[in-house]
Image (cartoon, rainbow, N blue to C red; front, side, top):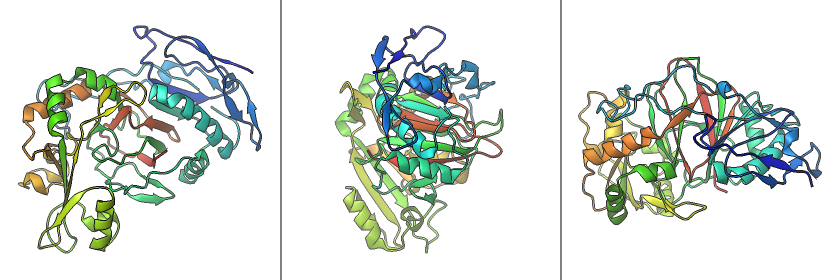
Length: 402
């Protein structure tokens, strides 16, 4: 059986955050850097129905570090529309992204099979994979690629602020482009969350215009959080509360529950909420509030160690107050789209929120998209966010259950 050698580079070498892998498909050698050297066998798709054992060296080569270099340093500290950035304890810039890799053969179906094997083998180790130069030229190609990966799609009520585009594909976010989104794990406010997030770049942003995707590891964040902060949230849990106005009232600036759930029937909304374990109430104007108590941590999928895994900062009223939509408004905390509390209903201290935000951004790194890139994230191990941008940028996403 043919072999691929997995090579190792020390973390203090100029090459590498070993958990994040970047691949460029091309005929040449595959190297990525994590752990010690070892032999690994791979099966790859040959373009027919036959699976043959083939060395990954046939398809991958090292991608020069400069391929992913941003060329400039997007500021984090004092960034407009980013909660907490003016307090003095944010880093000026996020960390450099230092490791890369290389693809170009088969039809889309064939590459789906190859990528499925790669993702199943390596995503649990690295947490994030970027694939560049697949033969995907538009959103329909991406949908074909997704369908042939063979994963089960996440269908526990995709209720985020995104637009459905058909076949389990959505806009990545409908928030205004100037908004910098805090790093988060998708749907980590809920007991039901996708295991993977797959993104596709339809249109890359112009150079020096922002729009980088931000990544950081849950484990890294957990290790630098104040243990007392973590302990208190573990003891009390987090209460996430949502507010969605009725489209027939003048209840606010945000999307209505009809927009959010894509239905007009309150009973259908209640069925969705009950099936997901949320409590809810309707006021006299048929505005909807729903809430859920949830743990702030989950076990690491490999080691079992506790990891910080929640959305308490980006679902806190302070996040929404920093958005351009809500500038100069006097909306009560409980009438923003979301607000988070301690599980007993008490307010989360501003200093605690600031500590968590500063910790997240202190271990964040980012990369610049190229048109038709595909990124696959392990949603249990890696937080993602985005830097605000100007000009044009289009990213779509699909959420994977298993």
